[in-house]
Amino acid sequence: MPDDLVADLLTRAREARVGDDLVADLLTRAREARVGSDRVVLLVDGRSGSGKTTLAGRLVAAWPRDLGPVQLVHLDDVYPGWHGLAAASRVVESSLLSATDPGWTTWDWDRGAPGERRRLDPAVSVVVEGAGSLTRASSCLATLTVWLELDAQVRRARALGRDGASYEPWWDVWAEQEARHLAVERPRELADVVVEVA
Image (cartoon, rainbow, N blue to C red; front, side):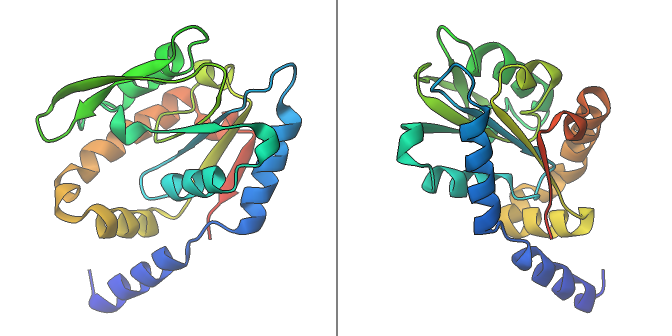
């Protein structure tokens, strides 16, 4: 790839930011969508490098007091290795959003093995972010669902700029799993809000 194209992609990647207006709008929507519950379940999905972690962090940082406390789950802590997108989706549906004993077993990336069990408070709001978080089953358990869309070249530049050498050999493997997730679950169509990240 020519150096000027790489520089342009990195510039566009840095400029692809989550705005304050978007965060405020999503929090307003989450508040309004709570029907019969004080708890908010907010799912943020999108392909690698689209800005899910950034958006989730901004949402939690701006979380209003009237919505009570909030928990944040990054699916990077849930995926059981580089081939684990579909498995993590099932964990979201069956365990993370369980009404009785929500939680998950972490993945120890250094050991390449399951880690410790983490629990969530079922009465406290939760933001779950990660590729594969939004499925037909999980959307039924959520208060608000968000899909982030961003140009593939910009996403790749962002992801590799963030994770570098550890991610590059796995980019295609992960992208194939994302493509399967999109084909099977159609998360963009399930989303209450689709954000075209600019």
